Length: 171
Image (cartoon, rainbow, N blue to C red; front, side):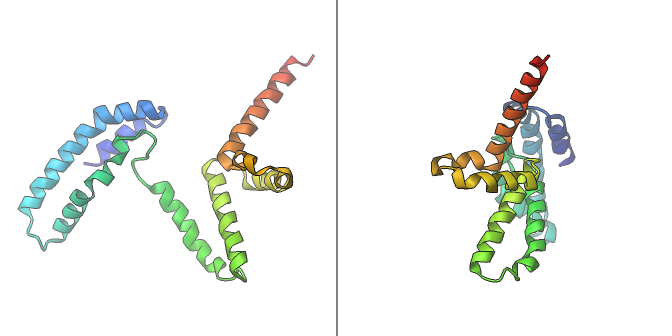
């Protein structure tokens, strides 16, 4: 029953968030309605102590949360990205035991968050952090938002585009 939902998502992968929302509204909502009906039928047929009844009840009790992707085209159908990032946290937990002091732990957490965000935005963390650390002393507090990884990436793309335009004009 979930396979059709993921097939719809696969079709809408390259669409904009608004287009994806429209596709989900037209195609995924009816599939979800059918799934909910099946769950309600199963709930009536299963004895309450059956393990499947627990799964059905859990799904029905969290129905709104499970359907949130149909109300926002930017929300993914699954949380696989979050799960992968959590694995990094778990793997780093052992390393975190040896940060030395609370300040070191805070610094480690900030760096882990920044590098994780860089990976999510397909940014080279070393390049980003190098430029950040070189420019941070001259940066005004009001300009700090420009150094968030997603904003930095947009600025880099704009700079690159401008350089390409200038290079194409050169004789």
